Image (cartoon, rainbow, N blue to C red):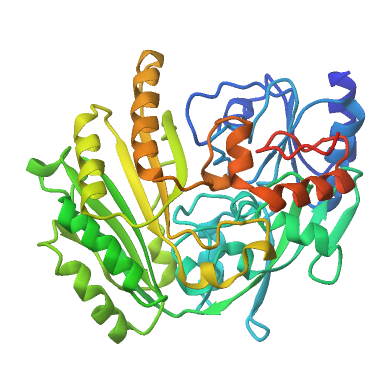
Length: 454
């Protein structure tokens, strides 16, 4: 059956059809996260939406599992599967920028940095995450929390329309006027409803930002004050505080490498003269260990990724409330108690434009959350994993403070109850209804799955 399927795909499709034994096969099945050694029957890289539709139809006809890959960043390894079809969008990178209307149509094989660099040539931007190699397909469908969230909202708040291949192989245009139920669902509901081939985004005029990395000593007072300043700052400022072991990088003083620090990323999306003023209180919290914050173009906010790094890690994503001095002290103490080579508690202050959208307006339901927290620890051998899991679970429980919820784009293989936490109450019920309408057979199930009713 596989031989017949592969022969048919090769005959019917423009693009690449990669199978075991081909020289590109191992690279094509490798994803960003380490620890996955899955072997698909075929990896297909179509060049257009018609090709995507043909692959979707082939998966439905054959009954083989279907994995969709945009950038390969799924923490649960959903970008690759065993014995099935991987639909890799890497060859679909067309981008149409219309500065006059302030919009862009982008194919979903683009990465965040590729898109951002291209529209940045026009002095414009759309907010994605904080990692440039992430595919725009996955990050958009899950929500999109990043450097511009407080200023302009999530990526889905900048999404005006999409083109989507559904389970029956049909290419649909979805927006507020066409299939509005489906448009609601793909704004936060992940890849449950089809393969997005193009997105139409709103562009923001953003010729420059004031941003970069600011490393501060990690004390309870500094951490609690940093987060308080971030919540009080103008909406134009988005911050990400990574409380972590200082990496062995050339810019870090050798005597501080491995000690717990606050590696903060800051992005002020406003006039330079105001940005320096807004960022001054953060620099005043303590003598900076490293200060790389400066006026720059927005594409410079993306640090280069190492494509050869495939870390194995345990992680947990959650939402929390205010982090005062006592909880800040607990975070630092727990980080100091771990011997993981890389361990981090990441704290993202939300609010701003994220909170100005009604929770029911999109499938991202956590609009009122104050802070998103992510806890992670790397491991190098399977024997280390249980200890890392226990450490992550303990710190995550302390951080949660009774708050519920999870951000679907940061989930790992945490089980169905965590998927339900990402889509609470009526959001889940509505997603199930849309799933039943557009994918009753659950063809698109290799994701954080919302199964159809029944």
